[in-house]
Length: 372
Image 1 (cartoon, rainbow, N blue to C red):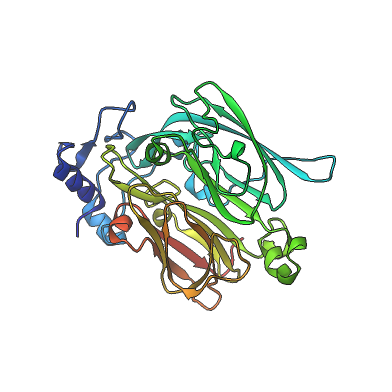
Image 2: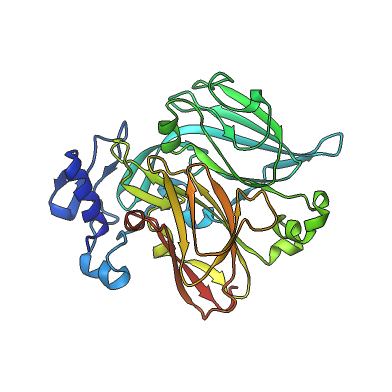
């Protein structure tokens, strides 16, 4: 089995676009942050894989070294539970108003040890902040474009044409700003992204994020228990362990083919540092696919099964007792499962496209008796 870096190098050589420096000691994929991704050895860690070490630990399918999250300005582990609730106020009619500020900016980010990608970001991170609101809230976003290209915010939801964030409805030029305002509906697991053209480039470069609308239980008396369990900060919700996972990929030389795959942008982040799970508490995953250049992405859960809510817009499962789900780009959903009948241990989950897993989309849950 080839190591992760050998696989990436082989793909680049087949395409005739890479230069290998010093065997596996360094990798040059492009010409600097102005265009394509770059990777090189540096003092903090080495890009190359230790073949014997990686085989001993993870069967040869993991990057070696650590990404500098301080340099990036975001940590994929913290990103799992980083809900942005906005600045909250109350309108004269009693409606809750949530104000946000989102800035588009160009920024180099490290997506694997030593591999730098010239991203376009919302608030300096990829994916952008996870906006979490309640059904019926007024959402108001002041969007500033500090990037080098025209950008927009397009929300998957229900709103007017003026707020749709598409060409013709008002692209925001560099240095300009715009206020998007709408009521949050329907409830569910949604997303937002730039809709400027060429669309595939603006999305692939990193301009996307999760948009979660919790159900208002008072609007759903026939399924109030399920609605309360999803409403953040409610006692019913407190028993759940909730995580947001945005599946994405990175085309490091801009040939319309991904070389790196990940959840929340950092290759193998949750394999090197498994996600802690309290065995006694149920798990809910908000899963969003924004992978460009591949028709589908997927999640497979080992040694367990889950209920799935397509788009999150129902309070009863659309699929029951499955262990794999596929999503096309822009599709999303909610997974619910439990490890209460399992022994503690390390449980794998990953894309069930083997190439995606080997190139970064492989993760672990660390299930323990109690988490304090």
